[in-house]
Image 1 (tube, rainbow, N blue to C red):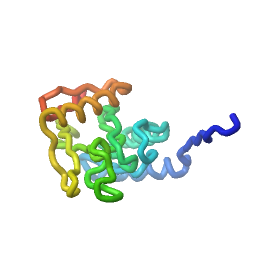
Image 2 (cartoon, one colour):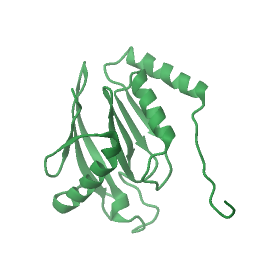
Image 3 (tube, rainbow, N blue to C red):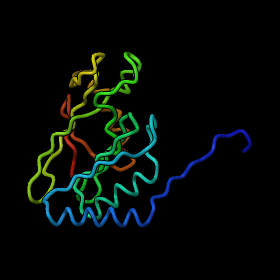
Image 4 (cartoon, rainbow, N blue to C red):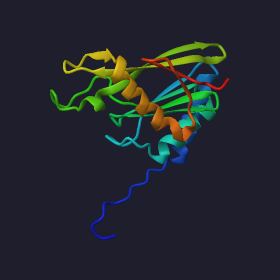
Length: 176
């Protein structure tokens, strides 16, 4: 449609994907747990783009236990996929373009307490965090924690991700 913004579709290169999968398989042969960190997605976009889901799942299929995404600068949902967990975007742990320039909701992130053993992930606990005006991370409590956690639960619904609400934290249901 004339005057409309373009639609951009990013498709992973098959050779790069194959190399990634081989690297993960190799790492998995040497480790009990493999964590993949990915700089992906669209800045300031609360919705995942299709290649994030494709590559996150491919990483788990190849042997990764945890995939941690970052770059959008906002929180995105969590998917429990097979025996792995994909965090599509952690948001901003500590980040500001200028003092006072980042809205509080865009300073939301999370800490993840992860208990692992030789069989993989045993438990994951998510705690909401926000960078304060001095760019220091603070664990959120009470109402601020609830709002942050509710947004995370809502954004994870498309994956049927389940959480156990424990007030100021969520325990991820791993389905084992």
